[in-house]
Image (cartoon, rainbow, N blue to C red):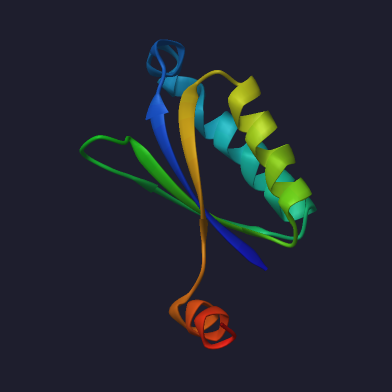
Amino acid sequence: MLKYIVLGKWTDQGRKTLDEASERIKSIKSLVEELNGSLSLYYTFGEYDLVAIIQLPDEDSMARVLIKINSMQSVTTKTLRAWTDTEFINMVSEL
């Protein structure tokens, strides 16, 4: 499974419709599960309002999730591809 960290900030529209956030989150979680992935969501203080850790089988699946998130226009996102320490060590050992 590929791992991604998504950093999110509420947009003006997202702040105005916080009462609808639970439905948007359910919709994203449903898509991630449909794509055989998993999602952990955390709300944060500081520069970003939320952090999601998403695991999916391939990049096309992640692209679909990001398109859906951004189409809702409630958050802006930055996405990072992530590796575990073991995965990273394996990559480096192959150099």
